[in-house]
Length: 615
Image (cartoon, rainbow, N blue to C red):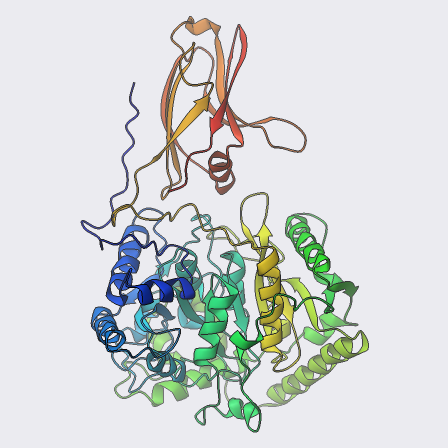
């Protein structure tokens, strides 16, 4: 008996190389380039093959707005440099992606808005220029929540991006396209921006590392603005080392961004130099008790957080529960986006030759924005003037909030505050996300780093956030490095496996122990990109009346075995079908935590599902 499961097909051809890029770190890529096992052109082709296989088909993540037509040409030039003995540094020849609010002088900057689809900036953003100087290859631009104004990554130009760990759920935002692309290994690393959580939330829901830097450590020149007082930009990465390499390439003083004057007379932090596997030994971490609810759906996130903090304690950190007195009151009315967005966007558009629109009001009048943003944009467009008593009061409240946070750090002799980046699992698409904590860093200008803490029972990633003092960014990254070295939590999404000869791999076949036969003939397979289980099960030796039901049962639960999926019911000796698996069930199958149970008049027939080899 054969089970026929149609595999998703990827590109018609693919780069021929033995080097696997899925989950490869930047140092891994550099070693392969140095050893001649691959070239930058090959890397570009392999990443493009993964994008072709998984961005519009398979899990259909929808992360990419536009690919760079010059990517292979850039890679060829960098390969030629390497062949001549010139290697610029650790980013030389490394393919990366940029959120589509970073200016590039050869590609549009759209903010994922239909209104800006033809906007052509005159020059490169500061961080883009730094990356090009470092030898990076820019593969293309990623989708974002339209004009960076939300945290679910939906837009009029790019549509809805989906989360590779569960495509039914949102990818965070506004850098959701960036986060999903890095999680799915569409590039070695990718750049986002963070005005209130837009780097950290996508990092948290994609099992990634993401730093919102101290305001002024990285330049926002050439980044389409949301709020110049809160905007920051930087990378998301799968490992701390990759994050450090990417940060070293792009942070620094920029006369075009007045906020970077914070670095004047100071040495720019060095992230790679700060990496220390013993960094947590002796550190004091205060856990914000108010954001660690043990109740309801937030409790599943808190349990993951508590386990991660206990692991930090085992590495020598002292972890204490703390509170910021009157925190809710201090946080209220401290955001600047509503006050600055309309005017910052207008100023940016005025500086772009032949911009297709000149204001938020023109975007609204033309109807070239997604309906999900309509109320948001109209409310912000009602602002009459940039300067107002409300702005003055907000700035005063921000100073009071910052003083309270620094006072707590000093009184408790803390190196960092810890709390979940999102207090709830990432929401289903179409459902409003809840539980964000992004404003504590965004409204104080203090650095905050999201670290993969583990996964909930549903198989969804949880991010632990560490907030530190101004320009303590490298120390936070060192803490993350020490934690990752001892307790790596990175697990790639099952829905975007390595390609097979440049194509989407065929379904993995699921066997049973004892094997099929002996009264039950079962053939099963899982198509990973679509998350579909196909099965054909026959019970040939019994009359239909003797068959009660056929199910999959989880064997690894704390409270004992439990049925998780019905495949056939009474009087069904022959079953053929296909079902979409939840992230938890897909993980259960790949981990071998399920069994096939055929219940008949003769009693239950148990057959363990043998975990398949991962592609």
